[in-house]
Image (cartoon, rainbow, N blue to C red; front, side, top):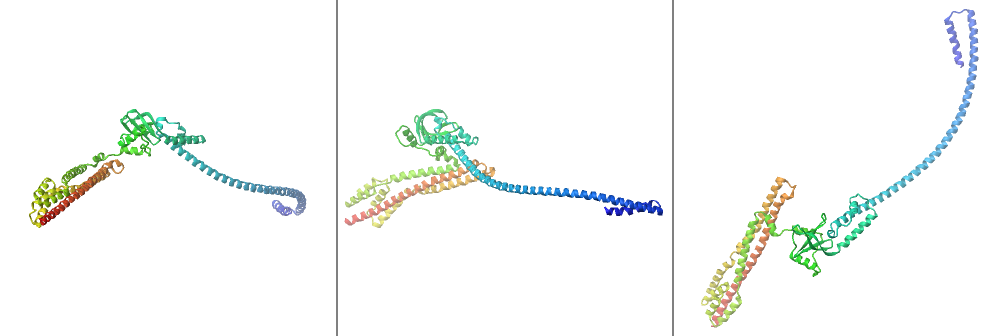
Length: 479
């Protein structure tokens, strides 16, 4: 404040002197006035200073009072903050403990949920299996289908399984187990092989096999779950099986044929092709193979009959000649051989008897000539049979090659998307090979057996020829 007054007085004086010219008296007056003004200003400044000091003092007192209030409030707030911090820490600890418990409960809930889901999955799978088992049960065709709607709902996930459903599944399964061990015979409607619905005697062997008998016809049944009907198989079983079924249904037998594959083997039986049904699938090469078979069979039959008709009790004949040679009755010996003129052994022995007056060497030559004369008729067609046995598999191989060529041609045109397009060529390839081997094996075996029979006959002729020479020279020595 003093500084302000100190600076204001000179400023005012300068301003005043600048504005108007003054005299000395005026100057003194002005100085007096200035002094007076200065004093007034000083007093005023002092008054203002005192007021300002008082206001400052009051303000300081209020500030001190407010400071104390603020410090007190701050202390209270700090105390509250410390209390809140402790509460926050406690809450954080509690939250951590709750999080740990939540994680534990979550893990446990996940475990329980996975177990429940697994159990529900197992229940649904079993419901589906039991439903299919009931639908495929042969007993259903006669007794009617039980209520299994809950099984379908559970299996298709449109219904959450409960304990009542589990009990129902267990009951249905036990009923199926019980029915699978039952054997029943009753009258019922079936669809016969002609497609007509007729009444027949039905034999149910558990849930595995069903058989029927209509008059003198007996066969197996196939079950269709779609229509809940029993259908007779299109092909009848073998006669032995038909007799077994009839005897079991009449109570005359304790055993019956059963298909444990639930119809799989029976369906395979209906699709099984006999050899004569497979032959037309072999293509044109089949007919030359069959021709080879026919010619080979004719040769085998002809050779078998020929060799059978040439058999002779050579030991008995040579024994008779030996008895007659003791009496030197060579005419009777020749007559004994003439009685079996159609037999090679007898003809050779006769040729030797006609040369009985010759020397031993000449007689042996005559016998050897007679033996060589008998060999060609016995070996006739045997080489042809061997040739046919060699040709048959070659023809089968030719059919295999042509079939594979056709298959590759189909693949070139249509690709491999539809295997049925390639089945013709593959069938031709396999059938011709099978047929060629089927023809060659018995023909080769027959040729071997016929060769052994011819060799045996030739050996027998040679043996008896040597025996005849010995008998003749022995009789000459005696005489």
